[in-house]
Amino acid sequence: MASPLPQVLLDGLFAGGTYALMAAGMALILGVVKVINLSHGAFFTLGAYVAYALAERGVESPLAAAPLAAVIAFAFGVFLGKSFVNPARSHPFALPVGTLACALLFEQAAQMVWGPHPLSIEAGAPWIGPGGLVIRRWGVIAFLSSAALLGGLQWVLSARPGLPLRLIAEDEEIAGSLGMNVEAIRYLTFGGACAMAAAAGALLSPSGAVTPTMGRAPLLLSLVVVIVAGMDSVAAIFLLSIGLGIFGNACAWFLSPQWSYVALLAAVCLLLSARPAGIVALAERRD
Image 1 (cartoon, rainbow, N blue to C red):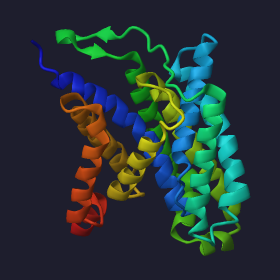
Image 2 (image 1 turned 45 degrees about the vertical axis):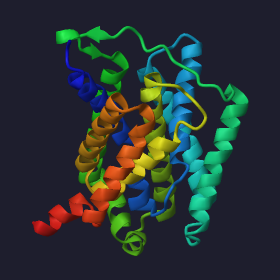
Image 3 (image 1 turned 180 degrees about the vertical axis):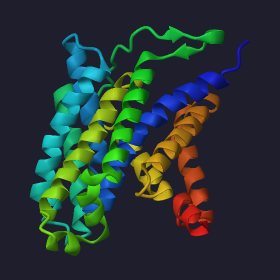
């Protein structure tokens, strides 16, 4: 009998690489907008429902659903950022509560439109690799798409187009004194991060059931990744997301799916207890 380990590693790689897209969006919000967006998981769910709606109309490719989901989420994110997040930034307790209320409102709306029952999207026939390894098409598409988008984000942040984001993250007053429209950059960044979460949801939609509350666990995972890996390194976010994806998938395979996120949170709690500054900050301190 073949060992399940290669299958566990491959599926964890696919899921973790795509969750990194959502975590990178969370890092942008925390670094540039400087708020905690508890509605981030709702945009992930929105992307999955957009993929389901397209699949019902015969367009079953997550690669086709991701751009549409990103555009819709960007529009909603810009509206939310401009109408609520920017004005409420001076009230730190109101923002998490308000974004959480937006997430709950979306969950109720999704339940009214699509119902409370789990929905599924046809994933297509997988490829069979060496030794009977099942290579899921949606996984390959999701991983490569996420890697390409994150590579583009890393380039933008390190090149001249990302200078306003880097400057605002460092010092908003200096950015404003240089003539930058800080408010606009904030809500556009917020919208772009929401688009990244929706794209991740669309890409991962064939991997499991689509439900109104499916974005809660990815929200928690993205927060954990940003806390541990930091907000400055896209590569660190990508690698840690993959590691957590593999670890969580292994727990789901060898224990049960219910223990997957419990084990992930326990591992992260132990890591943060030993290294409260996070792994990236510790490495920089040693350098």
